[in-house]
Length: 239
Image (tube, rainbow, N blue to C red):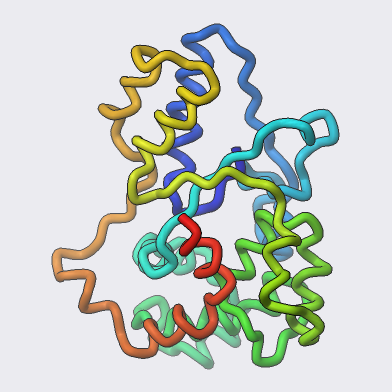
């Protein structure tokens, strides 16, 4: 199970581990080097990627979770991990965003684009894809560095890009419990063994403010999702 951040992966890991433990089955949680963000203070984490799957596990079915790109972006904005661990050096951060961490959603998008050179370790001028599509490539593609290089250097064919992604079974975050139960039953678990999943509380939930979160959806945000997250959208629309 590949744990794509802010999609419900913490919940899925928790209940899967509980299920396997109760059934007396082997369950191993791998902590792998963080290759998604070169400036990360965490050298190892639970968000390992497809290209990091150890050789002895390469033949296994791979499953992950995908979430509506607009909802996921709003969730990362409201979760505010970026406020506690800013993705830009302090001097540059305060020059660009003197009111940090009080950022609008549009300023947050700007922050994400400005942080790319620090996340990747090299500068990217006018990247043709958004941060979520970049994260998707890093998480799920067979050779993410090559794919990103081809995209940044305009040496790619958009209709063939998905062929570079690993073979992955995606569950839909909007109906995660149902999808997870169906998936586990397809592996041979009985309905009585997995029914507890429906009553389990979600993990690492982002609490939106009292105001309607639709007020956060600006025209700039919609344009960003539509224009720059085309790769992410192409995967999401297959759900």
